[in-house]
Structures are given as C-alpha cells and as structure tokens.
Length: 334
Ligand code: KG4
Image 1 (cartoon, rainbow, N blue to C red):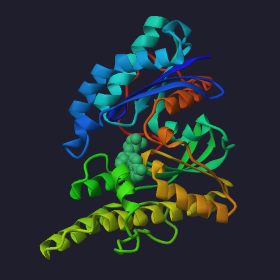
Image 2 (image 1 turned 90 degrees about the vertical axis):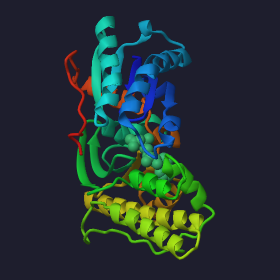
Image 3 (image 1 turned 45 degrees about the vertical axis):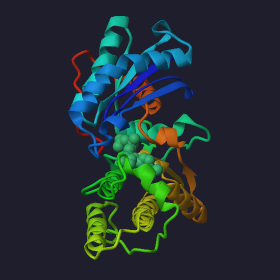
C-alpha cells in the first residue's frame, strides 16, 4: 500500500509518500519562515495564501521524489486539526478533493497523533505502551500512548508552549523567527548558570507546564540591562533560558514516566530537535534505565511523513472521512 500524506496545519506546506512498515519514500517540506520572519511570528492570512500557492507543487514533488504517480496511490491522509483553520483547510480540502476524484479512501489525522507516532518512522521503533513528551510551537504536553490510536493526556502547558517561549525570547532579543534554532546555536557559546531564570513547577505532583513567567523574566532581565546602559549578554541569556526550559521538560517527562510505570520514553515536536534537550534527556533516561526514542530532527518539526503513518493506523481502524468532514482548530487529544 502506498500513502500520500499532506500536512498544512501551520506555516509549512508538506507532502510525503510512504509505505506501511513505515518506509518513507519521500518527504517534502516548503517552509514559510522567510515570509513570517519580519513579523517575528506567523501571520495566519499570509500562511494560508502561501499554502494555496504551494500545495500542488509540493504534492507533485513528493510523488516525483518517490518515483510514483497518483495512479500508484492507495490512500490519502491529511492533517484535519488542530492548527490555523485557514491553513488546515487548504491541505485537508485538497486531500478530500483528490480522494473523491480518484475514488480513494481518505483519512483525517490529528496533528498531535502525528507527533506522538513520529518515532515509529525510523528504527529502532518503540513498542507500546510508552510515555511521550510533545513539545512544539503550539503544544507542550505529556501523553501515555497505549497503542497507535489510544492517547491519554497526562499534563499540558497552562499558558505558552515551550517553542512559543523560544520564539518570543528570540523576538525580544532581535534574533528573528523561528527562535528555537538560533537560540540553541547561540546558547552553545553561553553559560547556562549565568542568570538564574525561574522554573515553574506548579506543585510537587503536577505534570502541567508554564512558560509565560520565564518569558517575562527574560524580558525583565533584558530591560534592566538596557536601562543600566549594558548591552545584554545574548549568549548567556540564551543558554540560561534554554537550561530553564530543558530542566523543566526533562524533570516532568521523567515524573510522568514514573507515574505511568512505562519503560519507554518518546519525544516529538519542533523543540524535540533541540540538542541540549536531547542530550540531557539521553543522560537522565540512561541513568534510570529507561529506553529513549527520539525522531531525527527532520521528523521532529512539522512533516507529512508522520501524518501518513498516523493516517495508516486510522485507516486500519476504519476511520475514513467524507467529502463534507470539516477541519478543526482545537485537538480533542489536548
Ligand atoms: O513542530 P513544529 O515544527 O511546529 C509546530 O509548532 O507545530 O515546531 C516549531 C517550533 C518553533 O517554536 C521553533 O522555535 C521550535 O519548534 N524549534 C526549536 C528548535 N527547532 C525548532 N526549539 C528549540 N530548539 C530547537 N533546535
């Protein structure tokens, strides 16, 4: 079986072709970073317009790179939600129309489910069940994953997502968008203990997160440096900020794993590409005898391959969409 998958929930237009048994034949991503960079964040109207321009060429490129045509495709999968509705509608409507015209089955996929299963795109794959941290620009949540269709949320952010905090801190330091990659690069030259930024624990047993106070603390620090005539030590700020985020993400992930009793830990989402997070989590999981599964960075950030894989499991579960099925902006999983 060959699956054509489409992802357009936010600011990347992506398409992939994959086979069951998780072999990715192609994964194409058209980034909109250049369009949104000067605004320091995503402008929804510009995002959906760009998706309309790019959806056809990106799908064509994914088919070409896989060496197949639409005649070879057996199933169409697309992100149904959550995300920016104007963006989602482009990919989801394109997928439904294509399936209708070609007489193919079509599945709608929850973007979170894609991230929760993206570690299955490569070897070694985790067996079920596992505890997963999904950490991106829109979400920071912990889940128990019992099988490819059963996800139980254990905790989530009460305000900003961790990726959003990276993006906002980058904006206030004038580093551009997206913030995560540039902050992690600059942090490598900084001292993570230079500034004692706050870690929000939200109570001893809480598996929830909060990053808005940390972002405000960085803003206050930068402001006080500027008012006293000093230029902020950007590398130290990046390293100290990143350390505060990583410490909380790792501590809560291990607390969630202790809570579930699982032996396997999985991460996903754009912030899961962060080298410091990957390093600290690797060390801490090894110390506790837990098996850690981290997708390659290209499968951490938004991509259509993970949507195709999650879509395959929905197909096996018989969850097909109709031509009038709608997209949704909020995830029932979250
Ligand atoms: O999963 P994703 O591509 O899109 C969604 O938000 O769904 O994640 C994008 C987020 C952005 O906030 C970006 O700043 C962050 O992931 N990110 C990183 C890194 N690479 C991307 N954050 C920290 N370190 C990174 N290396």
